[in-house]
Amino acid sequence: MKHHYRFIILISLVVLVNSGSLQAQDKSYWSTGFETLFSFADIQQDGISKSSIIRWAPVINVQTFFNYDATKRFGLFSGIGVRNVGFIYDQSDAIRKKYRTYNVGVPIGLKVGNFEKTFVYAGYEIEFPFNYKEKTFENDVKSKYTEWFTDRTPTLYHTVLIGIQLPRGVNIKFKYYLTGFFNQDFVEIDGTTGDPYQPYENLDVNVFFFSIGFNLFRDKELYFTD
Image 1: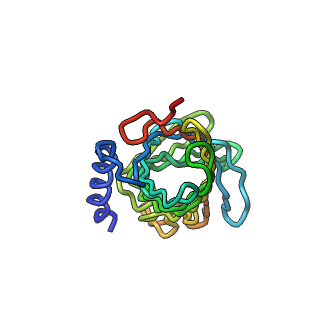
Image 2 (image 1 turned 45 degrees about the vertical axis):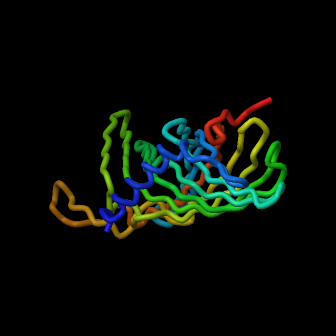
Image 3 (image 1 turned 90 degrees about the vertical axis):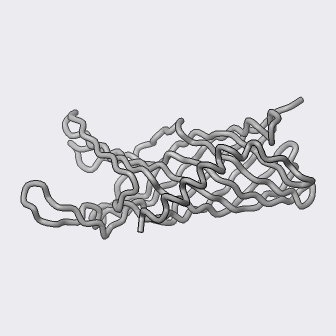
């Protein structure tokens, strides 16, 4: 089932690259930029709460929005973006784990305020993970694993977001992932015993992050102007 989303993601990336060439008409326009993420997570391991460690992800987080301003103070937006999402936590005193996925996201939401200065926005975004990475640090020895279109994660994530757009293209956003980070039904074969087991069965994780974004372009013009 994962492979069915490859075509969706490919088309999404094409739209992301070429959206800057689309022209605004009347009340609609495109805005394009990037964001840097500061991630945390709600973690339950074997029924015990675990603390996450802040994860900074400056790359790759690019996005483009299609805006429709119905009035001077109310509008709608959608778009597409690529986002680096993950979390860090200490599995035990000797083991630190780092996880991340690259996701293609498609948001839909509304915005209210002065669109030339400051406004607030909120919405829903669906994200499709396409690349997974897991790092393990055990007694200062690092190992890592990467996989494309893995079954270790869900096929898609449901998320909600809220934010504020400041003058000159700067915005601050909070996003929460309603879908757990892992596919807890995933089955792996133990390399030593050959027995099947579920590595994420008792690991329940919901990621959330704060981000600082910069909208660099509005259509083909620089977003920030005098």
